[in-house]
Image 1 (cartoon, rainbow over the protein chains, first blue to last red):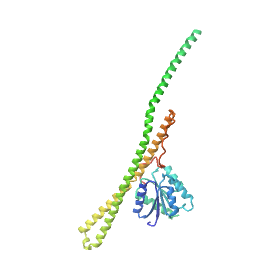
Image 2: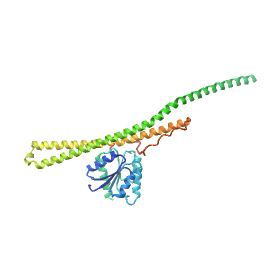
Image 3: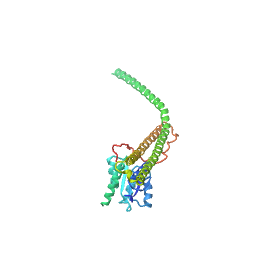
Image 4: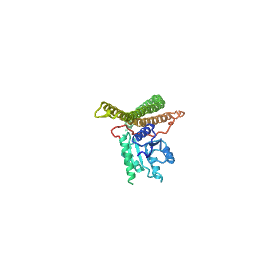
Length: 128
Length: 190
């Protein structure tokens, strides 16, 4: 668990701080942040990440465009992605899943839900 | 027959005259109403940028305050973690006889550890609740966008009144991205 390198992508500094704190509390010590999809892509070019947690509504490049880009790239097509967003309608969830997210959380989330979803995504990824 | 036609023609002309007069009065009232509406429209349009800026300040102040609370919560959880660590050190350095059976030392240390853990959990709950700031910030961004749309509409109305030289509304200072349906609900968490 502790060796997992996670990238948290959200335009809200408050949400980034809460997500990073929640992850560290759960034992994920290696966490970096990005303020939108464009910033996240720049970080992914420099560092290797094992897991991405991304918001949907962000300026410059939103979460959906970011995920679509990653899934079209040979390098990142299998990178586990968890979307954490306020968008709660069924159509949005379906759209995000179609774009390629591995799982989806509606804000506000509880630490237990975040940890559970991360585990589910990792288990599914490990299972093939 | 002729006299009938003449008399009905006179009646028609009279009706037409009355209708035209009513129409003229109505148009006059409409023009007066438009004139009367002009000033409030100018006033309303001029107030929109101020209202938008005020919302922007509210969003910024809420974010700043949230981060001050986060600073405090992080300090509290760090100190509580240090207290837990110190209690463990205390248990190691004190003679084992102090912890036999249900000794007072054992009970007191146990109570301190429990209260420390409770404090830490409460502090984390405060941190989790601060997610409201992201959600209300998106609601404010939505309200700001709606206000700017109203400002543009009012501007168009004033231009149609003949004020072609009126300065167009300023564009937003930064790109906005928000969920117009963002809601804070602890019921649907996750």
